[in-house]
Length: 570
Image (tube, rainbow, N blue to C red):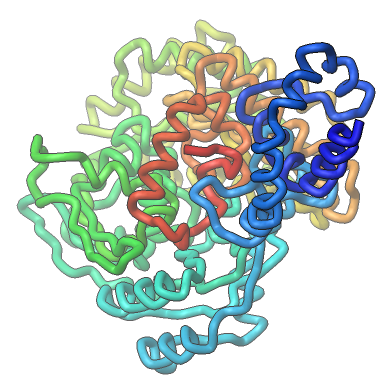
């Protein structure tokens, strides 16, 4: 009796450790752990009493160690970080998360680090609140962070970046790389404060190799500025994400754009790069050779790592010749499934299109409102064909025939530069046109991607949910490679609308995953898509990613809280 009473007090004194341990077991192994006294009593029996009496020596040890363990769990960093919890006990980035405000632990930046950074960066750093708020609250992201960066630095050279990283690693202060700020999944949030490294001052073109059709650039240059520089040489860089995106950020998120159907994504268009690792080492991942079988493919490891493994400081890009001739075509369809079917049929025919873009009737309506146009408000496909004049026109006629077989109408095409530019302007300004419909709204912008054969099914299924929602939702797609985008407009002050926007996002992601697709085709993971990675990739893959992260960044300073769900343990 006395023993039972003593163990009861022991269990009570160790409750914080016990609770954390039980939570860990239930989450990691799917075990259903009884919590209530009644549930515990149901487990008790003769064997339980024997177990209780046989653990007296162990009980003394646990009692002595419980305070130390409690301190460990609450104060010390761990290779297996505890998930950040919001006030409703939902894991940020976990599978049950619905909260869009990313919370993190924050501690004051040491004065010694501030002094070291001021020596390294001189006048190229700031602690001004407005500047920190601007860098910590990306305008295009549905996701927000509780904290903002403590310091913003603007390095001018690779060596400065290395010194900054070394100092931050020494003081175990988080680092968040920052580029054009066009990412939309919370990549540049600073949930734990720390140092934001703004790379936009590193925007030099270091060398152009016209005969090799490659260029070496710093990460802060924008893709539009780069193409303006390349145009006189008859070359261009074929990836075209949102205006304002920088090369470093495009590498970090493994972005693509409307031309990916012909030229591939960032993964295929980066020859090599240089990056500063968490210990300050500067690593070059390869040579300028167009192919290599030498060693691990570190270039592809860094592309898509979202700043969690290193800070990219130099990139060698593959270039393309500016097409000799091009035709832009547009066609309307009675249903969005018909439009998607034509995109699939076009790709299956072997026609070498350079763009296949799909817009639903709601998106076309937004374009009409924003630009004073009178386009038919129906599901629409836009194509671009490139090559010689004869070849481009031949492709156009072939696609026109395919479209007519799927109830396509109003097939128009343009060959003159200004007319083509005007047509593509419709697609490029689609996001901003949406706000003409709901001027005071915020936007949740999401993307998923599926095997091409499932695109029509995904869009049709998603469209039923979108049309039934009280929110204004538009559909855009890079239809040639199965990449489907949606813009959901909602009132930021209306909690029910925000939850509805997240519900639609969740529906589309799970629909894509059920079709053997991915939760993001080109936007990246950041904080917004972490909660879907376990279903898509599996625990073993995420554990492998975590091991790589721990090996390269043992202090977890590189963009912490992104990409890898925090509940994943090694």
